[in-house]
Length: 247
Image 1 (cartoon, rainbow, N blue to C red):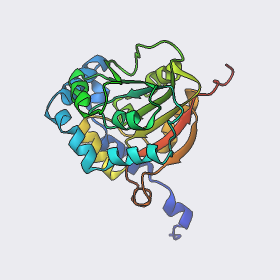
Image 2 (image 1 turned 180 degrees about the vertical axis):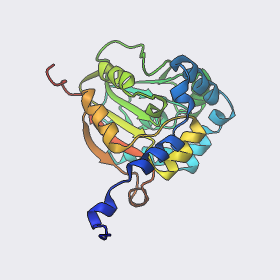
Image 3 (image 1 turned 135 degrees about the vertical axis):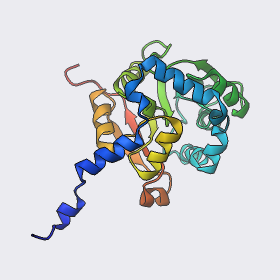
Image 4 (image 1 turned 30 degrees about the horizontal axis):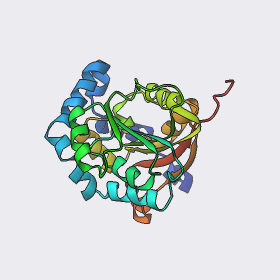
């Protein structure tokens, strides 16, 4: 039998990829009606796991590193006048927006868990952000309301990302920007999907979904060189609202 070439060795085994996805994904996402799955997720975040989310984000360093990203202007919010944080959770991202965005910026956070928003209010060093209980697939805002959207580890709660992405696009102003953090098809991603009852994404499918929604990626980001080397932190990227093909 001929020895495998270097190219062959680099190719992913489709069967292994499918097995990893099957294990990683939360099975009920595919079997429960969307409303029932949404209620399951809301209950999860309302409960003890949600109560520990702020600490978990500190231990994982995700919240501090996102804050550093804003301070270094790796994702620049210093000129944003209207910002929407989708899936605000315990305030891990929005608390940094308060510090780094202009003092007169309108900042709004949404989450499906009212209990998480109550926890977020205690973490945010300002009463300025407006916190609203809402679903990312049915955003209660007018078209073209925001310059910037941030969304950290939330899109993975949609089996099909497109309903969420089209809502993101709708409420963004032309050339509006998004900062996205999404759970990836990796070993850490498997743990995340089982813990938080969500799915995972690979980079190509996520990239293609954003392009189809008129939100092409501007660049990919890594929190630190260690994250890049070990493929940690999920898929982190900036996207921008563009005209849809044929639009």
